[in-house]
Amino acid sequence: MRETRIIMGMPITVDVVDAGFGNLVRDAMLWFEAVDAKFSTYRADSEISRFNRSEILEASLSAEVQEVFALARRTQDEAQGFFNMRKADATVDPSGIVKGWAIHKGAQMLCDGGAENFFVDAGGDIQTHGLNEDGEDWRVGIRSPFHLSEIIKVVAPRGQGMATSGSYIRGNHIWNPHAPRETLSDVVSISVLGPDVLEADRFATAAFAMGANGIYFIESLPGFEAYQVNASGVATQTTNFGDHVLP
Image 1 (cartoon, one colour):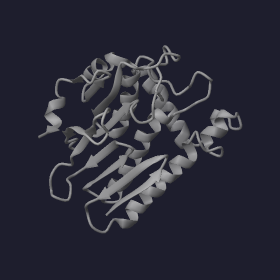
Image 2 (cartoon, one colour):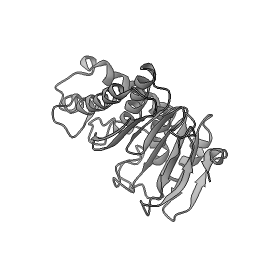
Image 3 (cartoon, helix red, strand yellow):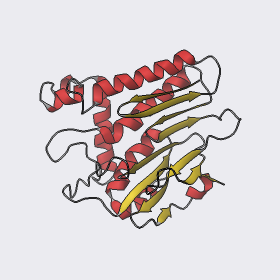
Image 4 (cartoon, one colour):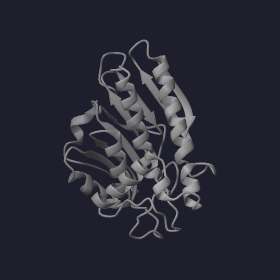
C-alpha cells in the first residue's frame, strides 16, 4: 500500500510492499501529523511555539521534544558547532533534525508492526527497508539543484537512510551558527547516506552549514557517504559513495 499526504509542509509518502498493512500505513501518517502538531514553528499552538513564547519551561516539555532537544545538542557537539537549533533571535527551531527523527520513528513503527519491505519519504529524506515490489533494491534519485525535473544520480541506500540539505527549494533556510548573518552560497546541495535517516539528516544539515568543507566532514565519519554540488555545478563525492550508485 502506498499513500502520500502533505504534512509538515511537504509531501510524505509511505510505501509498504507487503500485503495487509494498510492500517499500519495510516498509523504512520497519523504519527507524522502528531509530529507536525507538536514541533511546527508555523503553528501558534504547537509545543515549540509555546516554548518560544515562554509559556512552557523546558523541564515541562513532552518526552518527545526533550528527546529532540537532546539530539540537537549532541549534534552541535559532534558537528563542531555547525548545527544549532537556537536561532539568532534566541528562539528555538529544531526543524533541522525533526524530519529525520520523525521518519526514523515512523520506519521503526512499520518494522515493529511486522512490515519488512517499505520506504518512507518525507520531503526527499528517505528510509528504506528490504526490497521494492520487483524484489530489487529501492532506487532513490538525487535531483539536480538547478533543474528539479532532472535526476543526476540514482542511489541504492540498501537499508541505510538518505537526507539532502540545500537551498534550491526552500531558499536560504540553513545558517552557519558561527557566522549567522552570512548567506551560505558556496554549496547548493549535499546528499548524505548514513546508518539511518536520522543520522543522515542531522549531519546533512551540519555539513551544508560548513559550506565547501562539508564533504570532508562527511568523509571523516565512519559509515557515511555524501554527494555535494557547488554553486558552479561541480559535484564532489566521498570515497565510497560510488558503491551505492546505480546505472
